[in-house]
Length: 117
Length: 111
Image (cartoon, rainbow over all chains, first blue to last red; front, side):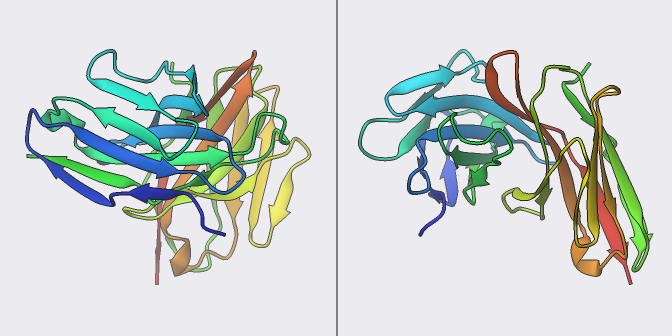
């Protein structure tokens, strides 16, 4: 039973390129969350998605960032025209639907470390 | 005011010591509380949920004080392997699903 799978583990992009980060949730999990962690800082919530639906994107920057979770396939976090400040670790977590017990925590993937040069 | 606040530390303690971390949260309607552990350059992993009645898991004890809106984690008989960053996590409240992570408290256990 594979956990949350993220790829790539490491991604290097030049300024102005696009970055695509993928996340496959745990089997049976239908909710996906993306977090960003800057060096020496805590995790910052970005977006919460269900299949084909964005539930909460209050943490997403207004420009260049988008996320989707299609009916088939992994969730994608897309960053267009990357800048150096986008360099960070991006973690994805998945959970059971909201009907699950409130004290059910998240399972995180290993993260994608984006470096913009 | 941050939604979840923690002392960043670092806490430097010798092996065998007892160490306690506190965390405060601002949303009184928050529903669920957790401690996560994050090792350097790794993903956070759930350490334990926190219940109002307090709960213990081996050397780790977690407490929740809803009236004062703080959560604590006590580690007894510290091991070298306990060295990590401990994240206080608060979930839900007033119809929201969002989970908020504290910035973490760094612990170094020395031989």
